[in-house]
Length: 233
Image 1 (cartoon, one colour):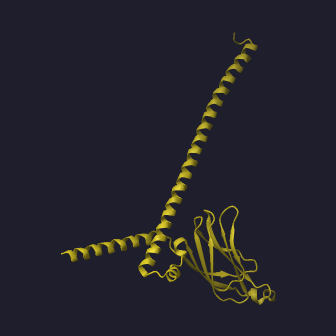
Image 2 (cartoon, rainbow, N blue to C red):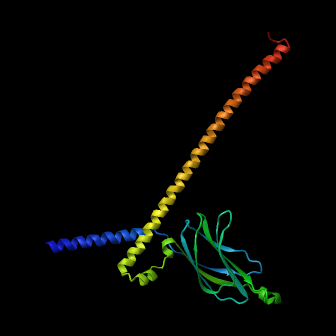
Image 3 (tube, helix red, strand yellow):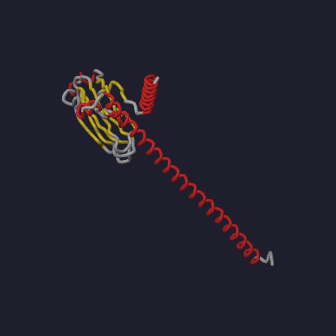
């Protein structure tokens, strides 16, 4: 009886652990992957992919730039803040490249590409006559998804279960940070709402007092005017 009871408890604990792991994996941020063709031009406009990132979040950008003759692809990573902070800028990238940055603000982080026609080759005419493009395969990992747990496991000699627990720990921390961020933003919105309400109320009182004062002034002014014209006593 007791061995069966222990096995039942073990199965229940395993089921609870798997359920918790599934819920946490569903709540975590997914990996953002996109593949597109980037047209080449002598004066190209940037192609940007934006993702939300909190301050202090690790962002790993993996770009695989396909081959292309007479073309130069530049990459720039920046945020959407008013100052347009540039985290990284590289020219003439090709093949698979991996970049790591840390977000410093609550703005979105953008990965921008430009595909230039090679200025040394574009003067001959035939290069520009044919439309050219390069295929870019882009992966963006943010937060807990950007951590290489396999390297941590090899460095610290962790077992498979310990590695999964470390992943869950990172996901839980990210969820807690997300909730703290949402709470802070809600408090800021509430403070802004209260401040706006107080300003509207003060403006309403100012308008009422101004109208009453203007009405009294009109009454005394008209009374004085009628007295000067001997229309009233």
